[in-house]
Image 1: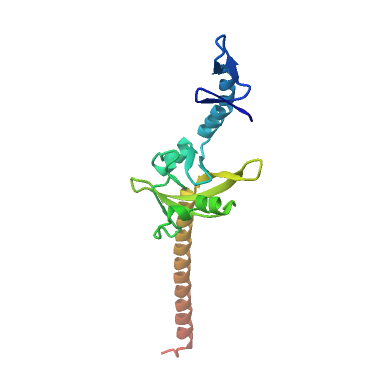
Image 2 (image 1 turned 30 degrees about the horizontal axis):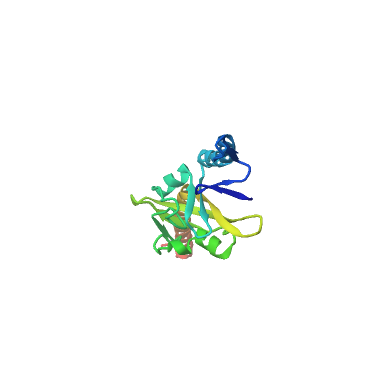
Length: 200
């Protein structure tokens, strides 16, 4: 697209107007139309209940919605914070720290591929932890050049709690079942011993 420069202002050709003095000014109506898609995108982003954010090709966070900020427990600085808005990230064991430049979003941007099935634990500034499944996907322009990535963060904390409760329940059931089995075996041995013993 050809650019027109006037007094250190650059406007795309075709959206400038010239007044009676021969001065060039941006066409306000056209500018509004150009901003509409961006506004619609931001509105869509905010309307989603799932955490979503984007990074540029260098890993700088360029946008995020309210759901992402709530999940992180903080609001990262646009254009400055990199890779992820989380205060701290841990591997699934909850003990081993995960460097930001090794998180799934960083891998996506460094290798130009989507990362699926990964799990991380994020920690908020207040110490709250959440189990999260990130889903970063690279974005490319029409020439095939990677321009950044978008990441959808699924909060799977409730699923993890349910899995832990189920595992504990199964453990108690197996323990009680094994104990009952031992009790029956002892009773059977006692009856067999009485039958084998001579009457007095």
